[in-house]
Amino acid sequence: MKAIIFSAGKGERMRPLTLTTPKPLLVAGGKPLIVWHLERLAAAGFSEVVINTSWLGDQFEPALGNGDRWGLRLHFIDEGAVPLETGGGILNALPLLGDAPFLVINGDVWTDVDVATLPRQPKGDAHLVLVDNPVQHPRGDFILRADGTVSDEGNAPRLTYAGVGVFRPSILDGWRSVIGNTEGAAATPPQLGLAPLMRHAMANGRVTGQHHRGKWTDVGTPERLADLDATLR
Image (cartoon, rainbow, N blue to C red; front, side):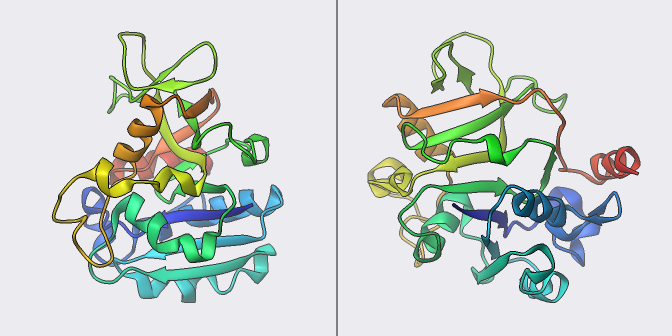
């Protein structure tokens, strides 16, 4: 299985830190956030990782090299001056990701989830890792039902999407009709989010999930980065 680490965002909430450093290369616990992911992927037996870049994207390859130090092969995809968003990033990377299911990780989270335990062949279009709702996101995102499916509808308590999941390329099937006639969808290459595609798949019963009760942090502000750094050190 291959993996893609989303690394193209501008990190505007992390400024001034991200004025000179892309968010996944910010350091916590003595190493860049993205290196924590690369180490876990290597330990889980992954061999190829796609890293999509945009904002300050020329810093990634000098910082990470070709992946040899972790026993990985890294592929860098420059999306240009405007990030393609998460769905567009996957669509743009499909020639490298191939036809098989792949792992998705947000470059701006830190977690101890064991990616080796995630299903290599999800039952539907996606299998999501969900976590308890953090203070900054108390309402959560999705409902994890007793049968293991994930839903966006209903009044049951919600969990937060961890930014980690296994996806099939089929998550993008019919994306134009799902996204609608937006300016981003008409761009070349298209700019589109992943969330609408996930909700569409959920409505068709094609998303499963699991509740990760371990450690997880959305490193979205300088304060959260400082807290994570102190914890890891």
